[in-house]
Length: 164
Image (tube, rainbow, N blue to C red):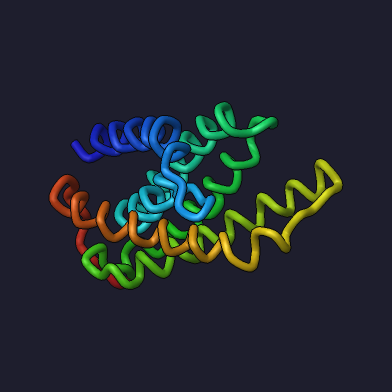
């Protein structure tokens, strides 16, 4: 039952990211709906569901927002897969850990995209984004995570925490 809900969630998130996110701009920064959802799926269901949700959502975003196919899908897959290994040690009821992971994921996503831009285009414009807009994006993504998690705790049945 949860697998169908995960597929629906990834599909709806891609629609939100493509249709709604570009129209929301706060201080010139557009929030990402996909990062908070991927964090939630990774810590809620583990590396398999989180990783492949990240791969699928990254491919969709690459098709719509990128000149190349694959970099965002690879970034999302790797980060979600690694984050999913902590599935049984993180409570989905604890919002502080999820907000912290969302902030970390946003920063890692930014750094990996900058690295790809440096490798493939040879130019790098980090100063204009690093000292302001990235922090606004971190706050926006963390707020989105907080409100989405309140909704998804009612929508999904998350496994219990187990320590091995």
